[in-house]
Length: 357
Picture 1 (cartoon, rainbow, N blue to C red):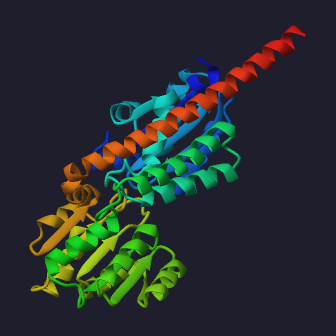
Picture 2: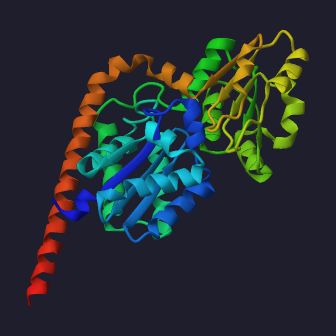
């Protein structure tokens, strides 16, 4: 087996291996993810490297001189997220060779997502690839792997029904809110965070008739831009607690390193609106909202795992489509594997001829 194919790897910690309370400890800040990528790429044994860092996964894709780099990659990830090797080893996976290719394709297509078939992950993979390529951390193999994974994802989505139904966090959250309130036209919504999840959730809310949307994030300019696009208002993140009593629905997706809404703050707001429920969606990782608020009367808190369980209620009905998609992806992975192997064998043969001459 060729050296290149032996040393293609993916180290990952996702919802498959880690519960929510572990995933939030594994999560990297954008700055730490970029630094980890550069640190690994600078090593003599790692030729190419790319880090995918989302709300439900931290994954390191790489090309190395030998598969023995696993311990090194694990140690560097632990140094960046501050967890022990014991915790990482217990809640992670290591893919190599053809298995790594297949894994990348299933991630891009949404088959490996917590909400099976969701489409947000493809954009996240494209962003991670663009960042790594701009940082000159990728090369021929990872470039081809990711570009082919995007093609494979498109084929799987267009040729099967894996994306049918409510397969995004935003859609599921809004549907859940609609079940609780009956209708959303008169609901007042606070978005904590102004990223992609917040924006897509807000768009889903508007499609259900919500007109009163307020945005607060760590950067006021970002809040203002999103609020303006929604016809809503922006406030400073530091001001949201004082205004909490005004809102019926709070959807939080910041990149804060810890809790931004605790039980005491919510209890104080409840006293000022005793007959109206609070509906809270926390899709941040690490979590933004103290999970103990769920013990308060008239408070409904849902996190990432709760939303995925709801979204996947009809998973059995889509099993045939998922199986079809997996077959399509396996075909793409196998073809790429053969291409990479042929390329490596040709390079090896040319090197041997050069040595003989």
